[in-house]
Length: 436
Image 1 (cartoon, rainbow, N blue to C red):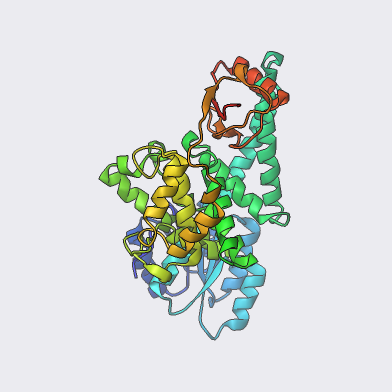
Image 2: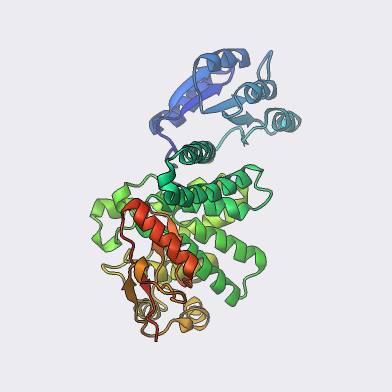
C-alpha cells in the first residue's frame, strides 16, 4: 500500500507517551512527510507545551501515570477544541477508550501495535477535516464582512449592491444552515462547497450542478434505490473537490491543452478528493465514487485502472454525466462541442470509456431530449424580449451564475440585466433561441 500524502506539509503534531521508544517510533513514521513534530513524556508536559505552541493534532497514548490519555485529551478538548485528537490504545483498554471518546471527544482511536499506513491515513484525514472546517468558518466570516461592507456602498451603486448582496445573503443562509449540525440539509452544505469552488473559475460555473442533475436522472433510470441515488448525487456535486489547491490557470483548461506536468496534477485530483471526503462519515460512500469517476470501462482510466463492473455503478454514471457536460464546456477535448456532438461522442465510446448500460440509459432518459441542431442568437440585454429562452448559462464576470440555461426571460429580468450592465460597465452577452 502506498503511504498517504500529508494533507498539510506544514502541519504541527504533538505526540504524548511516557515510553521514549513509542515516541521515537512515531517520529520515524511522520518525519519523512514534512510534519513539524513535538513530543511530551506526560499529559502535564503536553498541556504545558500546548500553552506555548500552536498544534493542529495531538496523538496520545492511553496508559500514562498521573494523567491518563482520557484525562489528558479531555483537557485538550476543553482548552483547545479545534485541535484534532487521536488516541493510541491497546486492545485491553476498551473501557478506558470509551471514557476517552466520551470525555475527550477524540477524532479516532488507533489500536497498538498500529499499522503504519492506517495511522498515516487517520492523521491525514483528521488534518484534512480540520482544514476544511477552518476554511468553512473563514468563508462564513468573510461573507459576513462583505455583506456589511456592501450595505455601506453609495446609493448610486444600488443595482450592483442589491445583486451582490442577494448573492452573499443566499450563500450566508446556506452556510448558516450547514453550521446547524447540518440538521436542515446536508446536501445544502455540499452545494455551498461546490459553488464556492466554482467561483475560482468562470468557466466552471454551474458544471457540478449540471453533472449532478444528469447523474441523478441516470441513477433513477438504472433502478438505483434512494440511498444510492443520494450518494451518486453527492459524489457528482463534489467530483472536482480534489482540485482545491490546483493552480488557478488549470481550472477549466482542456485536458488536451495541458502540459505533461499539469496532466499529472490533474490525474491525481480523484485521490485527493477521496482523501478530503473520507474524514466525513456521511460522505464516505460518495468519496469512493469520487475516486473512481475517471475510470474507463475498458480499463484505461485512472487512478486504479479498474475495468467493467469492477468500477462502482455510481462512478460509471458520473463518468457519462461529467464527460457530457465537459465536452460542451471544452474542458475534455480541444474545443467546446454542441450538445448533439457531445451525445455522438458518448455513443461512439460506448463499451470503451463508458458502461454500455449507462450509455443506453443516457440515450433514453437524457440525450433524446436534445435537438439535433439548435440555433442560438447572441443578444445584448437591450435587445431582449419577454418570452425568449436562454440557450446557455449566463455567468457574471466574477464567476458566479446569474441565469441558468433554459430560463425564460421576462420584463423583470431584462430590467435587472440592464441595471447590472449600466452599473458595472461590463457588456453582457446572452445566447437565446431565436423567436419564430
